[in-house]
Amino acid sequence: MARRIVIIQGHPDPEPVHLDHALAAAYREGAEAAGHDVRVIEVGRLDFPLLRNKQDFDHGETPSAIREAQQVIDWAEHLLILHPLWLGDMPALLKAFLEQVFRPGFGFEGGKRMRPRLRGRSARVVITMGMPAFIYRWYFGAHSLKLLKRHILGFCGIAPIRGTLLGLVDTSEARRHRWLDRMRALGRAGE
Image (cartoon, rainbow, N blue to C red; front, side):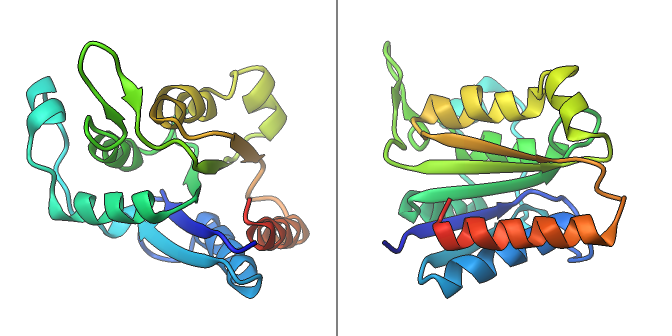
């Protein structure tokens, strides 16, 4: 069954020379070949301010680039979020984007009891890193992945959320080709 998929490219550098861009392109290729409808949000190409206080988070005007991203996410049934691991976490620009997008009224509805607004959607988070992925997962606890799964996407009702950790990204061309093939397969499956 065809799905509506949004790829959120979280690499802050918009130039398509990074592994994250190649992974997103491979996923899109596989998804479109299988008949899925795919849209892409490239965080590094968006212009939006940082949120600096609770008043702005709760009641500030939503920038137009963020409103457009929210419309695409609202349309989607599945989200693919890709980002490199920088200083043990997602790049600051991606975090700023997520803070803007998943504000009250879009990600959840407030009041005395918070209610998630984005139920019925699934997600996959792909994190690339220079260290071995098993060290990031077992020694460091995969902090960035847990943050996205539990405290951002999960809080908004998105489930299930799967994670893919790709380590030692600067090692071999053969490994890179295997990852690209894997992303094409995930795209075809709409996962």
